[in-house]
Length: 396
Image (cartoon, rainbow, N blue to C red; front, side):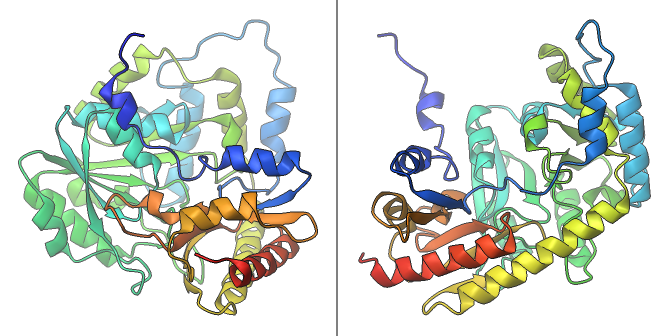
């Protein structure tokens, strides 16, 4: 057999999806699974988006512009304007999901052997995107005790070398739900300006900020316009994960011209999904108000339930719809697999994402799990009860 690439062999498994075969086996046995492992919201997709596809009068399903429909980019720029972020349609390239936007960013600013710094725990696929780009991730650990706040800037500076090209953050955070403050973004702005680095911010959860807190975008750090790259997506905002539409946004003209070459190489983002995503921007604010209220209720229900379980600690999230919980187990990978293979109550069990896969540092997060509160309140209550019973039975 011809030899496979080292890159392919080094590609990490997704901690979110690697347990799927065990889940499928459990379902084949007739077990119902409360899936707390993946950020697939059960919130209704806005009707205008669905109607736009149903009513599209298309005779030829053709390519779009490589940057995406101009009309969509103009509406996106207007949307950002309402968020207090002044952008031009030419500063936006539509991508096939936020994932492709991150790959375009990596491809535009790094060469094989370069490095990026990321506060950990972080969205596990950042490791995959870095590996695919031949880039090394240099982690800076944030603490459970601080709720995963920004680590001290001195810790970032320890990791900066001649190969460092960027700092990547997710705000609000996946998997932590942490929301970076304006002061923390100011600290990062000074750092990237001092060392002439890019600051990439994954802001796909921007609408989901709780307890009266406001989301702060890196695009409003105007003193570092040439350094900032923002990644966005419709997946979580409009509960349209299957549309696979995102965007890369920056005021750095040279960067965007470079990203456009990657966009042209894949021709165009999907046409029907752009039609749906453009229509979704007509969704009224009342939709988001209701969704945010629902997520706050779910968060509070989940956190209260988890904290009532002996030996469990939770870092209360300020945004997004995830939290990190510490469990009284030695290895959450083994526990998560056991939940699917050996545990059930009345033909029901729970699926969680082991948190070690969200760390780059070996040995970190071994007793932690990421939980997505994307189920109805009554299902979350039942899932927590199942988790409590499972922990009482489990033996390391």
